[in-house]
Length: 443
Image (cartoon, rainbow, N blue to C red; front, side, top):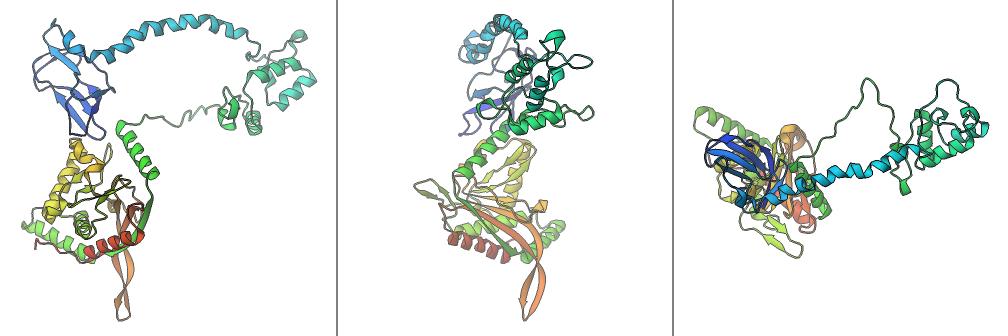
């Protein structure tokens, strides 16, 4: 298993392409994933896949043997010594698993003779004593599901009592649901195994049947869920919202488009590139925000390592542009697009996706029309900026003149353990100032 980046200790096998097949050098033999990136491994030689030491879905430590490729009949036991044990363990336990049903067979055959087991409902009229009918109505039982032990198969109170004891205890609401649906619980999820209303499954509709699908979470989704939950649990997060006059930025965007059409500008500089450029300038003035909170100390960065959220088919990724404060607007734009493309293709360097690699993160939902949101911090970073869509808002232009001007929404979530509200607000205001007075050195 190749080692992808310094922080990756194990990978998950996504799919095995060759198993017992002949392969040529350069053929794809298996694909594998880190927590957010995916890769394909090529065969280093011509030969035959003699052994697959792991299965799809297995987590394999890096630098561990995954496959053995050689010539037919070649001995690969030496290669399997360190890797085959985990894969062989389930096979060794298989005979025991196969014997288990035989050992349990007597218990299974004894189950039908239990007095509490429900029996098939008889056809025609149900004969039951008045006491049995009263108890069945009280306990929400259907007499047709109870076999009688009285004369001529008559259901007596003892039969109903046995059926009550055979099922889980039920809440009052559960009994009402059972009375309406005619269904009985098979297990209880309440205290001491008591059946609740949710434990009673209604008869599925013949037309719609099951209207849902249980889908297993991907490895990447699990990682994202775990990190987001940990972020909200382990930090004191607060979000401030502010708008910035976007007229200057939109004017620069028009100039960039014209320069692209004229061939004098090679980079397609977007509004997001300009916002990131403004954020970098603001971070240089507020170094406490360009930091990691480490519990007992703060790690203040001399350089800006900017993380930018990228939406992909596999989930949200946040690659980092290292030393972003050294880049011009053209260099920043090119770096952002290169990283976004690598994320979408699944070939991004895992080290660039680590939350520790970035000193600050920008997440832009403006293209989706989102007007306000509260981004979640990538710990141990101290803050994250959410960028919203541009909306018209009234503004005093002076001299008693008001007009609607385009405003871009900015949402700063910060860790209140690391930053005070005043400092966070001043930093957010500085971003707005940088956007409103943006200067690009390309014209």
